[in-house]
Amino acid sequence: MKTRVIFVHGDNFISEVIQIVTDSEWTHVGIEMLGSILEALPDGVAVSQLYKYTDFTTKCVEVDIPNMEAGESKAKEMIGKPYSFMDGLEGGLHDLFGVSFPNDGEAATNCSKLVAIVLRAGEYDLGQECANCITPGDDDKLLSENA
Image 1: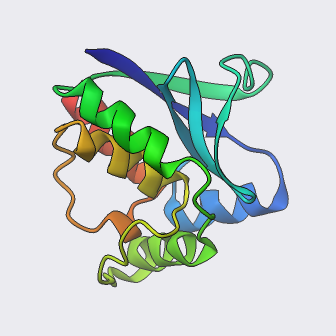
Image 2: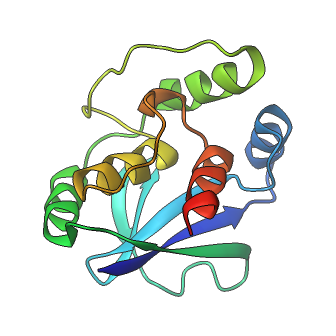
């Protein structure tokens, strides 16, 4: 079953840092799931209105999730989980220095890791082992190659 992953180009200071460190224009990512956008925000994992990013520069990549039921189940399970600023830092360090970190599970997440967790639960093969090290730019590259 098909859904879309939404990449967002932010324009604040943190977005500029993310762009520099990850060498990507994309600073945030969410996934259309459960009739909304599932995304990890500083207040935690939430569902947002589908039109939330109409005033932003965005890119949508359509993906075919082999097991949508499992993906949606994982999405529901992730709602309310806290945001992990450490995961974001780990993604940046991985992009800058190639450092990988052990997966710390799903207790907390950032936007890129959330999308990876949900896609993998739906049996979509991202081909990257380190969910903690993934950034919006990595998600874009991995999904665009498979689109």
